[in-house]
Image 1 (cartoon, rainbow, N blue to C red):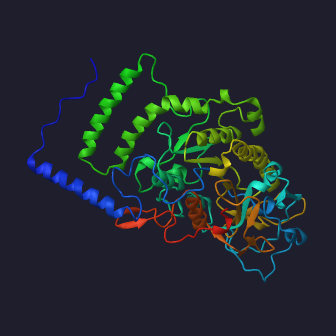
Image 2 (image 1 turned 135 degrees about the vertical axis):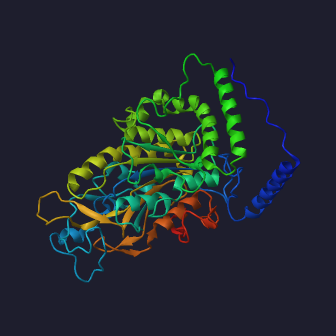
Image 3 (image 1 turned 180 degrees about the vertical axis):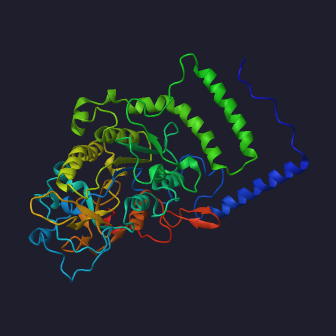
Length: 479
């Protein structure tokens, strides 16, 4: 028995034809009226077809390395000699206090036991925990004055990924997908890579779509040999049979959707079936490193050949960007060092230093760095004081600190070899050129050719945007 669609539905009545025609003309008018305000909320606008930027873009793709847990800026990219000089003493009373999960703490200052050095012609000062990233100093734009609103991981990871500390908003990658569409119809426009099986705080909603159509959500590639389940059809099913089955299912879904206009979950399912069919060929090809020269894999480090490691994910991110994937996120866990800071950061930096540096270098050698924006950073920084009673020689940790932290960027239209913003001499408060998460998002969208104030989505009578009612483009870091 062959899979054939059922007989055609009964002809529509005159009343139904007029009603549907009227609604169709109304949607065309609405699309025209909304064109200048942002993307119209119509079925046409919910497709992943590529769309032009609102103005000439500097970046075509983004590779976002998310150091989940909050790396210590004081031990990596923001040297503060004074906390070493005053180690074991409380912060002077003249310094404005900041609330952290520990409250307003008077715990003693914890020194940074790192060796620091200036690198490249730019003279960027970076600690010895990131020696290979440091060798790329002349390609980096280091923002030392980032700040956020959340105190704990769930809210802060949510804000860095969605613009809000409260769950339910579309993710950064979803906004990019919505605004620009996908350049490769055979791959998702937004791909998420994790180097272990644990999702970040808040779970997969941090790459979800919130109230936006589900079509724009991130597609997580699994670790190991099967990045997506059931990509290969059973051996007894030939391509023609599979195509006929998909066409049959699509026709049933389209009929179902006609009575449920605006059901984004159903729209996403229809689109996912078609994308999954095309991914059967494209995903095995992009995740197979057999065509990668040995010297390239060696450049990323000894783990680059092991699927699912951070190093392998960096190689995969470059391969995805080469093939037109617009937004790629690499999550690296375990940067939450309330204790054992020295041991923890030694481990995390060792796992990420060589691969991250190689990614920037590899993109540059291929001529891709000019239009690929690489971003490294977490959801907040760490305090300059220790958790617990400080004793010299013990491996203490630092608390969460949202009021200042560091993010670095490379390529994609940012100025290379510069630092932006400053924190106070204790690394405790921003004192110059602060960059809030909303500003960071506005700048990233700007580099992609999107005006953060014009990219909106209407929900429950209000037009939302990634930056809410805030955000300004940090023009000083744009080349």
